[in-house]
Length: 83
Image 1 (tube, rainbow, N blue to C red):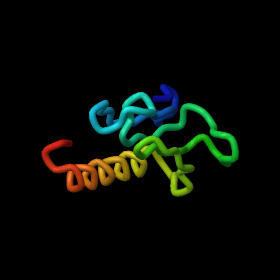
Image 2: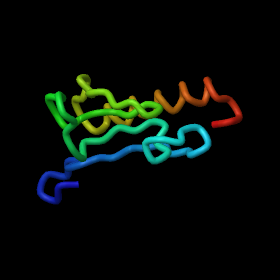
Image 3: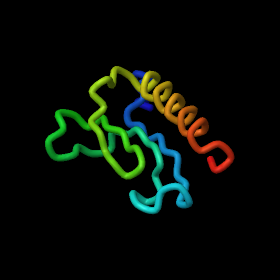
């Protein structure tokens, strides 16, 4: 958090499960703004089973968190008890 504004300065949301994803340090799904990937216009991106995508829909941390939660819900539906 930025102490002067109270806004989220940086974010990193990740679900890690080495049984589901051996690569990408076990990151199954994640949203962050820690660095920029070559060819991406901004630092906002997301990880899904070892692939990285530019998060073109990024508008705020709150929306990124909501999207992360939706991805977790889809993952639970897909993997069932293995999640």
